[in-house]
Amino acid sequence: MAKLYGDENFPLPVIEELRRLGHDIVTIQDTGKGKQGISDEAVLRFATIEERAVLTINRKHFIRLHRIQPKHAGIIVCTFDPNFVEQAKRIHEAIELKALLFNQLIRVNRPVM
Image (cartoon, rainbow, N blue to C red; front, top):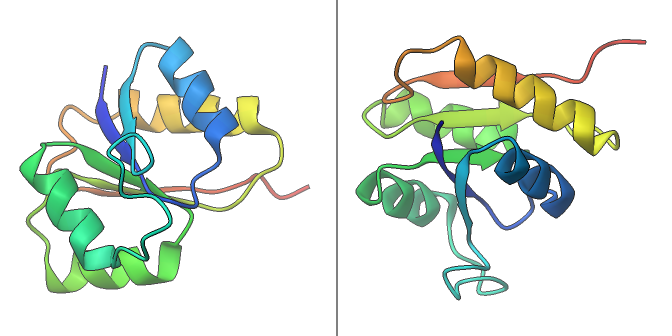
């Protein structure tokens, strides 16, 4: 299972479901850095040091960061989906398809209805 780092805006119910699926997830709130306005660059730097892939719905900024800093422990960008269980399943499946998350940008999108 994957080592992940949920950024400040990532939905907690998705994190809880991913934990139930066996993933090792730490959130920015778990580290005591919540509600401090930590920059995306600092989030990525911390996750990289901890060898955790970032989970985020802040797609635009983290896709840009991946382009300018392609060496990291992984970035998983997601569209917001109020069906948290299904979103967690899609993330889990996307992770399972990759042998390694390091330096990877993974996009997990809500299905079009």
